[in-house]
Image (cartoon, rainbow, N blue to C red; front, side):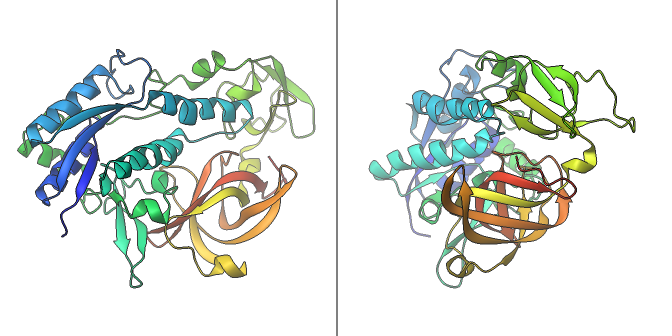
Length: 382
């Protein structure tokens, strides 16, 4: 393998530490960098919750010391605030459900970080993501699922472009299990070997997304309607809800069949939430906007023909078989490129703003932001 000058993104966790160690073992010239993304660097970590805490920075530094590689901290807090946190707030205010991890990978780790790395003469960025970059028979790079299905993170990397894949290294992609990574960290004497994995939204450490949003968005009481337009309750702010939500609905009038009701639609301009049965959440068609290919596009892009794929709409959801095509459509009054997706089986909880990642086998084809979905029983354009 050619010796490369690589920048290891050190989160302070076990995965990034072992990924950096493997890059060193491979003979690369490795430099570690910890990204300061929080505007409150004094924040303390609580178990598996927290973002850019004192502990994380210290753990990243200790890992670099153990590996004998240089360590730096880069302050990306302003860009993270603008590109991820503010975007998260704006999307919720518009009644959409964003994925901040996708935004962080797209705009911070593989945009801002990679751009700076390349400008400084580095060849690639190394991260602890569980995914693979594979060269196909045509010499083109493709993004694939990791060997460990339980830890696979190819979904949140679906935003990477062909050019970004050229400069991305994921040393953990072939590792069969997370337990093996922890065992390796312990053998190497890395102090983070048993450190808990981070989860939930990193900049909302207490996990209370609704409470956090209420401090950022002007919430007003409004009606909760059923699918017939009848008011069945009130809510404290439509923007705090998401499609598929059941808890937190103050519905005074029970459904005629006595079954629970779920959020089907959010109308932020009207400050209205529409609820209905679980069956009405079932979606079998999706229109996606802002598409990107993870590597070379399929030949069907040029012809607009349908191509078979599997569709995943959440990080840990099961992919659903279906088909998609590239076409044009109406996007908020303008004509733009969209991906139309048809599913063989219905899925629930599909919300505008979520990301649909398309696969063929283990290969990630690309991704789109969900703009509209069609319900199997109730053609609900949301």
